[in-house]
Length: 454
Ligand code: PHE
Image (cartoon, rainbow, N blue to C red; front, side, top):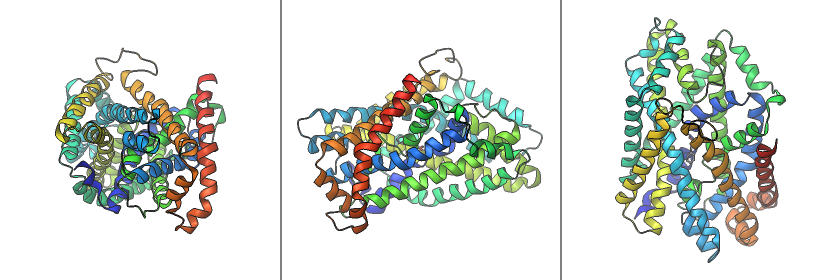
């Protein structure tokens, strides 16, 4: 049975944190900050994380824990015969689109991990601009990025087919804290670089003229992306929670840690971006240009240390990326297995093929297909913006509307407070309900509209 993979309580919580913490924090957050003008973006991101993400996270958790089903079945159970169950499709397709381009970046991390094994970044003879040129040459080439995208997708599919999430969880219990500690080390180092000050100012001094409607939507989208919201991943994992689990503390823990992780990554990358004279708006390649600079400057005084930091850093990133990408594929597989009664292997193979193919197009959009322009930019940019700014936002809106307006208030309270037994939750319920019913939907709609009209 597919659903037994996350039998235990800590496994489900670890899985949620594993899904949340990934390339979104380390790769996407810094480049989004750089593309959208720095501190003002971060401000909207933090406010969204607190006022919107927490209620959305809790809404998904409440639906999942109450029904113990994934989105399609859960909506049908709570609102039988209504159209809500069709949300199931949104939550199957969105993570699969995300997975396609996420896997491309996962592939880049594999390439950089392999490079780090040869101590490629501690060679003082290779300059910053040469590292950037090497990266540029790599992503614009045809075959190598495709090879690593395929390897990343295969790893992902194998982990999902064999249901070895429990095994992975054992690793991530170690690798996530290690990655976190390394991030802090890199942050301290990065802050000490000459010229880092400009990067700190960039992160802390808001320039509100940069806060366009599209920057606000991107900040909100990034907050949703980072916590895996609006796509049923949290809902599905919450369906494995035990009945007496406290959704509020799970939500606060996951959201808090995820936010903190992203901010640390921002402070690790941005000062070095400025110190190295890299363009902050460089786009998806930002960290892959900046990290070699950090490791090679570190290498000038301590080559062995920097070499080892680089290796451990890239391998732990890979684990973080995999625990997120597993959740994307798992959501689709759970749907096909639970609702369509398909075998687990068949379901995984079908979804693998679809995502791999779309990923190929995303990967080629840095090279041979770079001239194919869609709304939002290249094929890669299109998939990225479509999912984080639109589909995840829309999905999140539907989840809060469902919990705030469709579910019975008594049921929501029952799940939030575990039948009244959690005293602190009972006291906070009114506030939570207000956020879910009014603040979150209105804010999502206003930010969304500001993108269209401002
Ligand atoms: N939250 C993940 C990250 O930060 C990405 C993700 C998005 C995972 C959507 C699942 C669903 O990397």
